[in-house]
Amino acid sequence: MSKNKFLFSFYLSLILLSLLVFCLHLLALYLFGFPLLDHMIVLAYLLNMVLALIIFSVLYWFREKWRDQIGFLFLGGSMLKFFFFFLVFYPFYNADGNMESLEFTTFFIPYLVCLLLETFFTARMLNS
Image (cartoon, rainbow, N blue to C red; front, top):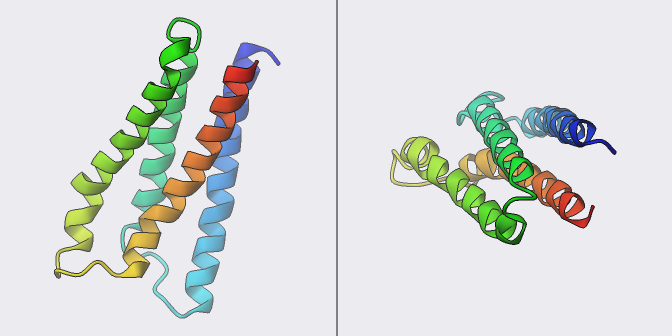
């Protein structure tokens, strides 16, 4: 697979999978009678997608020059996502002194989806 196709494949997979999981997430909220767009759910999906796009692009651009450090860059990207969680989401979620499981899953589900896809594509990139 050519270099540009591989990167495009990641971008497309990330967008489509995130959109699918977002719709399933909204469906589950609807079926359980929870408000659909509470807890900054749209921002959680968008921010995780944008960070995944940036992090994987950086990993891809440095895949040859810093091949031995890709794992550390990957971990740094995960730390960056947690930094954004504590900067953007945590103060909002913990404003009442209690972070509900619904609030946590609103951030954690898109985080996990993006992380799994990043991990899969990073492994493929390193194995090629």
